[in-house]
Amino acid sequence: MTKDSAQLISEMNDRSREVFRRVVEGYLSSGDPVGSRTLTRSMTEKVSAATIRNVMQDLEFLGLLDSPHISAGRIPTQLGLRLFVDGLLEVPNLSDQDREQIEFSAQDTSDVDGMLSRVGSALSGITQGASLVLAPKYEAPIKHIEFVSLDPDRALVVLVFADGHVENRVFNPPKGQTPSSMREAANFLNAVAEGRTLSELGQAIQVEIESRRQELDTLARALVETGAAIWDNQGDKSERLIVRGRANLLGEGPDPADLERVRELFDDLERKRDIAEFLSLAEDGEGVRIFIGSENKLFSLSGSSLVVSPYMNADRKIIGAVGVIGPTRLNYGRVVPVVEYTAQLMGKLIADRA
Image (cartoon, rainbow, N blue to C red; front, side, top):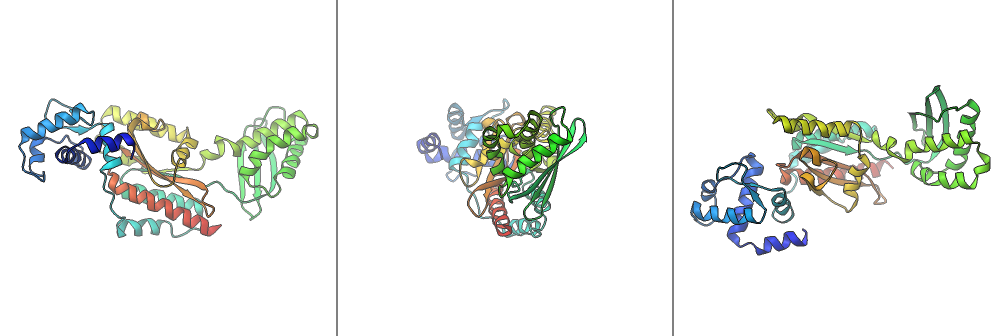
């Protein structure tokens, strides 16, 4: 909880805190503004509707509640939702049913991509949101690299790993490449890559190019640098994001403006924009993080909330993340334990395969 959140909550008396909590919980449950007459039937102490309206006005003055219409009903603001999530949200234990569904989706670990896709589908089904699963990079040592020309403006890099895994990646090479420059670039990379993972190779290439500049002609050096970008920059991350449950964000009769924002969100995801940022959202600390509305620029246009948690390998290094996107009226109490458990399970299963 932030210092500001803790201070605001501590400054509320018991009645204000209860009114605020019940308004937020009512809104998260129904999506509708909560009125004073509704609260008179559920308050711990017997108070009049007029008293509750006065409390609501005070909370509105603090920027925690808002009146969407002329009616007396209130809904939480983004600040109010943040305060509730930070200080008043009660997170129950994961239900046996949810745990079993997640574990069932992750039973077959022989195909990691297939497992992550099934886990994503299970996440979206349980939470009724859209799930995001950032798959781990392949981190086995490299055995061999080869470039293959497909067309004048397209080439293939073949990556063979020490454990037999093979990846083929198409990219646009610098103009003017010849079979000779491709062989030279591959020979250079194979000499540098021996025993290194992709991440380690990406870090080492530029240093090696500078120290061995005379060994490479201009064409081969350009090809090495372009090929390295495939695994060192966004191209390789773009294939790692698995999105499931898009339809859950559309609802049965969305407002046209909301529908357009959701389309923008998925357009961004389809174009793989800012995928590295998705992982960085989870990298600031272990455990679940919650971003509401405009708090993160990746999903702010759609007015969505994101619940995200990283997962780690056996060395406690963050290698991926799982998350759920939904409306700001997300059932946070249900989603948080599901995301947390899924991330822990992913980390354990991937560590066990290593």
